[in-house]
Length: 234
Image 1 (tube, helix red, strand yellow):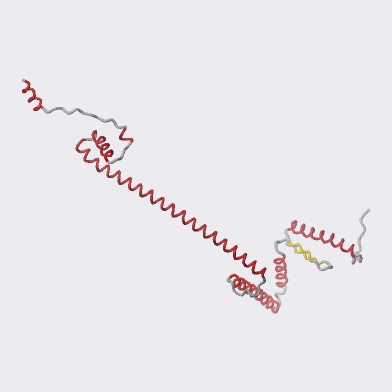
Image 2 (tube, rainbow, N blue to C red; image 1 turned 120 degrees about the horizontal axis):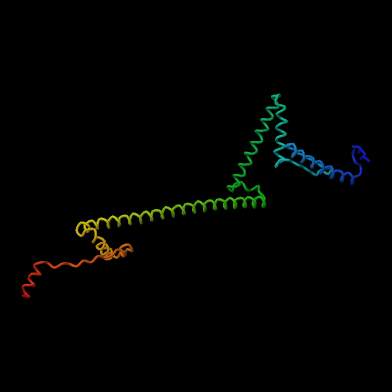
């Protein structure tokens, strides 16, 4: 058995009217959501109850932007009339002027000027806003100082390593220059022992020098000294 048709007219019973309003309102919002999702449409729904209570639904994040878009489209349809176009631009200019005044007023309040018209709650909100801004500024300042300190540390460490390398290079050059006279006088064999003695005297010990074998040679007596001793013996 099918459902009978309901006569569309005002419900006289207050209780039944409130129940019907609640059910139909939820169903209407559900249909608006489905329409926005299925058809990728921007839907805005505004409902005022008989008691003046507001119910709204917007498929976008902001109902105000949707209403502004509706007004803009409605006004563009009347652009054929020059008077309507002038009114649109005048209204747009007034909106921009009001926004500029609000921004200037907020700026003056942030600077601590013209606070006489604010309540205690407004002053507390302004104080919290300033505290949050100061906290963000301090965090940014600390981050910049930390980065600069780290960069200076890297530069100083790099300079120290470079200096140590230069000093080691100079020591190596001096060592090679000192070895040249030994090579000319004693030859290559005695250079190692001479260089080891030189570095031990200077207080420098090397593991590579300790592994080199030491060559000992007996000196031969001179010939005339041997002959003199033989004559004395005879």
